Image 1 (cartoon, rainbow, N blue to C red):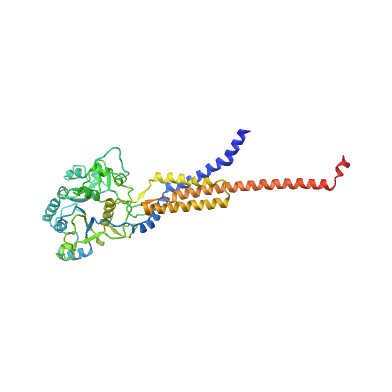
Image 2 (tube, rainbow, N blue to C red):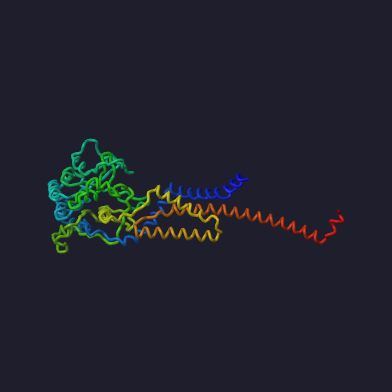
Length: 440
């Protein structure tokens, strides 16, 4: 008898709950595997970033020296179209004297065959500064197997591998196009300028380092920080930083306010009346292009087109202020979905109206928690997978509850029918009390 009661209790309580929870987890798992939850969460994060960007301001330690449309128009009449003679870039580098470090977001991969003598002038400006970082780029194909003349500068820039840390993005060092050896040996560090958009082709993350077969190649920003004389970053310090540990999941916090920005025309035109005397003093200066026609633009959640140098500046400001957008790993999202899917089971024995009210409160509480975490801790709570798991469990519960109510109603109707039949028999006997005796 006890065994039968235990089996009946398992079938009527435990089994439906497990089935309901399994339904919710299955729904969350399907969305997670198909990537649908990621796309929806990214759209929600776009709305959040629009408001969160107003709470943070760019670091005042950063200054941008940009080659904009006005600079191109001015120099086109003097020296021709882009690319400019590298003597002009040398003037920009010399104008950054006094800066803590200078990051140059311009690829210098080949010699200037028209103004060959200008290459040495730019190399001399880089050597004279002693705190410069140049840009290289990873490509999909191998670019050579022989040791490069710039191998020394590359090895100086690489961050050694420590322990068993491995990144999702794996590349060979032979896929890296470094600057021209003349420039690479003159600069302090070299860093990559590769970007990796999200599923919806918007740029939200920044890779401060990429794993190669010979070590970690820093980004232009990490290389600039390593070249900073006031805040030197050793390989151990960089490896202990969160964005270096997770380079492909480091989400940027963008800003509504613009960075401190100066146009190259203020230096090249010779009229520095609008340029402060010590504009670069004590700052990290990033030199790059911002003109529309040079195609160094990316789509971001904050704007339809953002220049590459502003994205680098955002990554640098996030680093200096330690204000990255924190997110869960994919497995963490799935774990939260499984736990959150079990929440409706706490209200199993409640009536249907009370149950629906409590479910609404739980969902509202999760939404409020997500908003508070985002605005006060810059932590992005996953939405689709947990909520779909919650609603999947709730739907499974409703199926079992409706079935239970239907069975209970049928049982009540059967009891009422038996009660009516018994009542009719009693009433009939009470109306003719002697009939039974006479028949006997």
